[in-house]
Image (cartoon, rainbow, N blue to C red; front, top):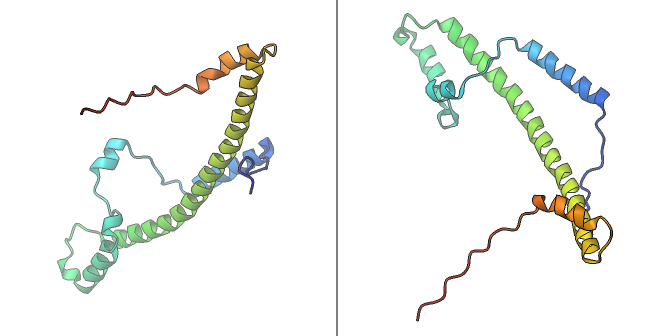
Length: 159
């Protein structure tokens, strides 16, 4: 694979609209989804990765000892919630994998673009050095995208 052209593909408006339609169809199949605020995400207790075994262990213990289940906990609703969480985790894994591919592909195509821009910028720099008409103005316009970092002077060594 060439470093300056990792991908060569097209995504036309018709296909993009089909994708948006399918995403809307998926959202329609999940009408119960909602968004948490960042504060809600921090506040609500949940089963995180570090509590992975919690779900199975609690379900097993609750089934073995139903007499210890508080009467305000609806066992049937708890099982529906467990089944929903399991199904959502499966869907989320597939969508996460797709999102990762989208992100990686976007980064690769962005790299292709950036490599071309770097080559153009270097060529404009050379043209400006040689006095080619309009090159200096182009260079002045594009230079803002390539700021030089301030070099920190190295302090002198003390004897």
